[in-house]
Amino acid sequence: EGTITIAVAITAAFVLPDYPNTTRWLSEEERAYASWRLLADINESDDQNTRSVWDGLKLALKDYRLYLFVLLQHLSLLSQTFQYFFPSIVSTLGYGKIETLWLTAPVWFATFLISVCVTWTSSKTGDRSLHIFFLMLLAAVGNAVATGTTKVGARFFAMFLMPMGAVSAYQIILSWVANSFPRPMVKRSAAVAIANMFGNTASIYGSYMYPASAAPQYIPGGSANSVICLLVGLLALFLRYVHKWENKKLEKAEAEEAENPETAAVAASGDRRAAGFRYIY
Image (cartoon, rainbow, N blue to C red; front, top):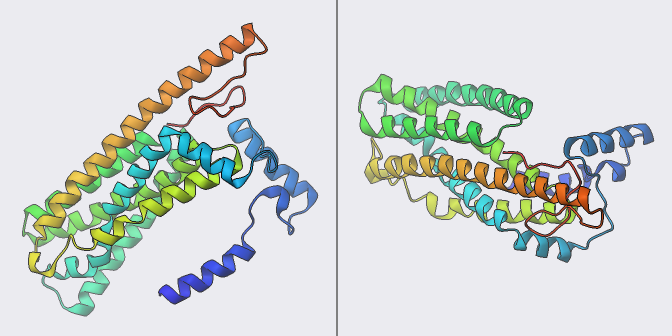
């Protein structure tokens, strides 16, 4: 699996487009339309030549919100470490190996459906934090029930809630990181890369949360994950208020600019934001 993933990743680097105006297989009209959609989305167009990669890295590291999002993504991935042992967790229900593998299928299919639904509603409503909070609350309940009872029916139901909440929330977190550092492009690229790099380090130690000796209820891992899920939800709410606060600062800056045209609308991080831009929360 790892070798195939590496091969696909290398191929993707040459196949996947970077930006609309550099995508060769799009027509001029399609490039213009894609660029317009980006402009309409955040009221600011991509400018590829204004900053270097190092400038983008510096801008990202100076933005205090990056560290909050790194922590959010790290904890979110930590809350999903049960995935590595999911067949083992399901096997504690008492069925054979083949039946256990069959029982994991409906769980992940339901998770897929929930992920599609919540990412759609998150996009339509422009909400990120509340979706994440309630999904992580669902995951916390799933971990708590799976840990706290030995009844087969209750534990199997809880095993649906765990990925339906944690995995679905992570899809929204990924888009929220990109939405929160929209321009310049080099800053967005650096922020997304840093969040992914440090976020995925959760797998290094998270894999030790479910030792075989803790079966069948896996109390240490399940208890820890319940708390971690709650922390992810609370951190999402905190970021909601951070972005509300940043938006108020943008509004104030725009009002000052209207009174004095020489004053530029700026975000707290110090890089310019176009008039009318607001952070999504």
